[in-house]
Image (cartoon, rainbow, N blue to C red):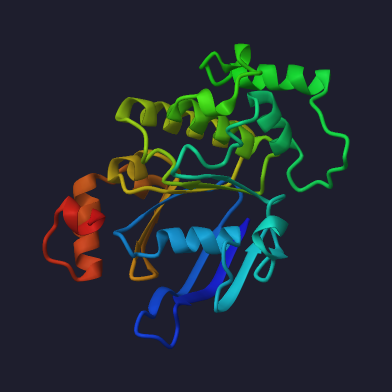
Length: 264
C-alpha cells in the first residue's frame, strides 16, 4: 500500500544550516498494516510523514501509494489517497463551519466542486449515524461550530473526517500529544477501532513508547534519518518498554538507557 524507495531529504543544502533529515530510507507497508513510528527529536519521523503527504518533495527516491507513483505530485493531488490527523487539534477542521459541514467537506475531498454546495438530507442521516459511533454526543450537535468543541472532540471528529472516504493511507501525526492522558487514551482507542473497522493502512508517529508498543501490528524506530528497528507480529506483542530502550541504546550506539535518550 505504501512504498518508500531509497528516499533522501536535506534541508538548506549547500549552506551552514544544511540538515539531512532522511538518508536513503526504504520502507514497505502492506495493506492493513498499522505501523507505529518512534524515535528521538530529529530522527526523521515527521519528515518521513510529510514526504509521504507531499508537504515537500524528496531529493532522491520514489514514493508509491497503492502502486501509484506520487513522488512528484503536490500535496493537494494526493488528497484523494491520504487521510491525516495532525498534532494540533485546531488543524484538520474548519473551526467556523458546522460539524456537518466539515464532514461534507471531507466527503468531497479529491472531487471537483461547483458553485452549488450544501449538505443533503441523505448525507445528514449518514453523518448522524457515523457521529453516534464516536460516543461523544456529537450526533446531537451537528449544527454546532467545530471551534466550540474540546481538543479531544475535535481530534475524534478529525479522525472520522480523515477516514470517511476510506483513504489508501491514514497518517496520524502525534495526534494525541496535545491531549490530557485520559482523552488521549480515548482517541487512541477510537483510532484502533476506525483503522480495524475500515481495514485501513495506517502510520502513527508517537513519542510515547507505551503507546507505540500497545497499538498497531508493527513498530518502527528511527534514528538520524534511518530506520534502525522494525518489529512486527508476535515479537512486537512480547516487546516491553525496557526491551525497546535497550535495543535503541545498542543500535544507536548510546550508553544511557533512559527515556530521555529516546525522547529527548
